[in-house]
Length: 196
Image 1 (cartoon, rainbow, N blue to C red):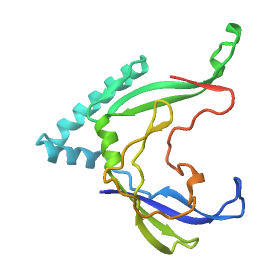
Image 2: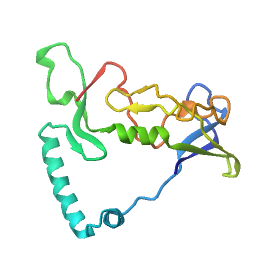
Image 3: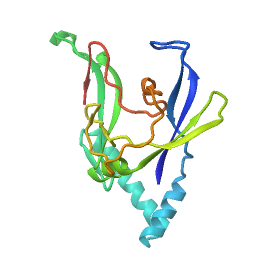
Image 4: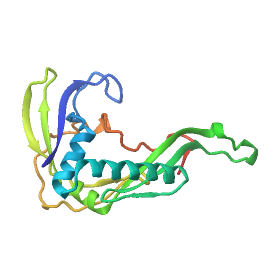
């Protein structure tokens, strides 16, 4: 099992070097699985009928939504915890505190240690493409396996599972691109604060 990434050479239109050609990384698109397939696979693994699993999942979902909107951090068994939070601006004066300071409502998912360990130990396979989509080479990344901490947007150093280096695409291939289409945490900019 591996996470598949595309590194495609593109002409940068913004940033520090507009007009430069660089390899920009993005996750390879996966298909969205249907609920029916998930319940069917869970039934195969557990010996419980898909209908019973669906009924239990629906009930658990209702409980999770209710408790999370009441301000609880709710466990998602085998996955981690979920809670709601907000992004808002910070103000000095008590008189300035109002609901318009809230810019967005958030769903915060904190993965369990097992999920983070699984992600850390999963290989990343990179397919390098030119501007026209032609394959230039394929590499298996030897990155350190650091996993982002969703609570504060940082990564904590994790030892490489194999202790080996590995092939890399060279230069700063796409490192300035951020998480293209990934939906990862972005720290607030300027004077804003994040309140959970």
